[in-house]
Length: 182
Image (cartoon, rainbow, N blue to C red; front, side, top):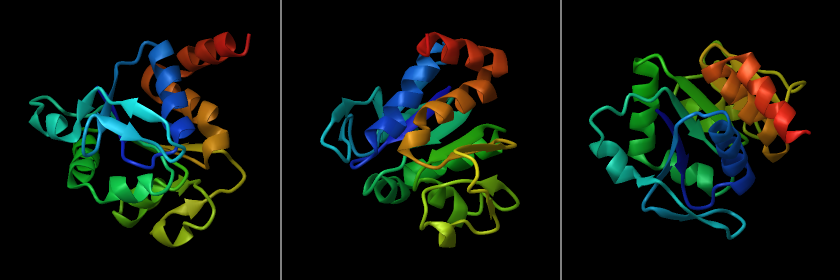
């Protein structure tokens, strides 16, 4: 299962665009509301998450195939403040899953040590959090092994395509991209 975590103040486009693309590709994505099922983004758009973070904790088989973290402020800080989000990240890593973060959210992975030796991209100004990582500013999205990072809202479509490619292959990603650009 793929889990996309939403916390108050998340960047709506960075969450909902990749979510839409993944579901178009047939990926089973569960949105997780940190602190409750109803979560309001940084631009006042309220989203009803599929489950709450407490419900995520109660799942017996919550071995994440992928954990997705959208950016936005204060959404990123609210994700980071959640021990449940950190548990999900550790669980994904321990079971060989993917970690995906866009905009400011790679900071959560960076200072937690999950970007050591990785090449990443992220929103400017968060360099100090990317401990042990190499930044490549020439790309909107970077996949380095099981870690996928993206620069910001303008990269949301490409981020979604990279997530599909990681989970279902390049052909599946190309098919969705062709359909949305028709």
